[in-house]
Image (cartoon, rainbow, N blue to C red):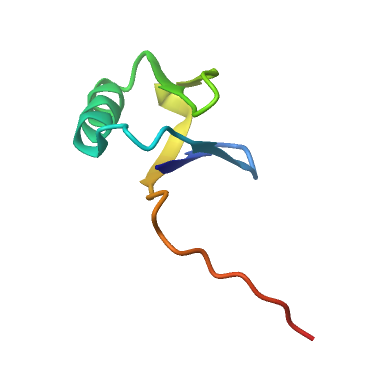
Length: 77
């Protein structure tokens, strides 16, 4: 599963590739809990075991994707 987090006052997004066995609904619940209070830190562990923390008050949006989604790839001229 992929997750993309937009951070306020930053032009770049945080993009993480999570393990395939991550429970999507559990992750959504965790994100909602952190964003609901507006306090604390959203901690996410990526596929390589690295922990990434983002302060809740700096999160602009969270986008959950899927590792099984097809990603368009091509070349243009």
